[in-house]
Length: 252
Image (cartoon, rainbow, N blue to C red; front, top):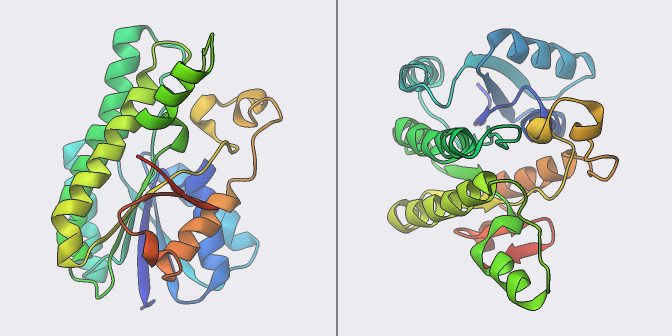
């Protein structure tokens, strides 16, 4: 069995897919579990990555971050097959684009905040079976209270928050979830990180080529995967409990 067992939610596309690709190409020490609402999409992602040549190993699991039964079943399966989990990466998320305010807020908060909270709760006992457990949340440095407040008060006509602001609010709430987990479980040995991937190619904005690529402005999501690799190989341990990006740490 691989020395490092990693589970990534929403790993069939975007940042999750890119991170999976980076990890299993980096070392034969990694086994990455591709978690997705759709087993078919997870299996397709596995086949695509394996076809390019890998050092580590892959498997798939059905996991809907908004479904408690799905979460519990996935945790039970990981326990049965591996007995532990070394890295949990809460990556799955939605942007809430194209919905009315109420629907957008419910969708973003349920998927981006409640889901990660339930998943972390379900898998935490498995993380504590690891000798070196990591809990990583994909957040957003652009959605912190301090950075947004500073821009509101220093840039006249600041209009960065578009639509209802549901996504921004959900990521601010997720940051608080990270702080709380780090405060409670950090002293017990769990290394907790919030990760700001930056503006990268993703389905978060929609599935059209224009939306995925941020109208040609989005960066390579494998940069985010490299940050995760640095985390799990211990190169960012000095930043435990922080909101990190590729070049440093953002204030909360």
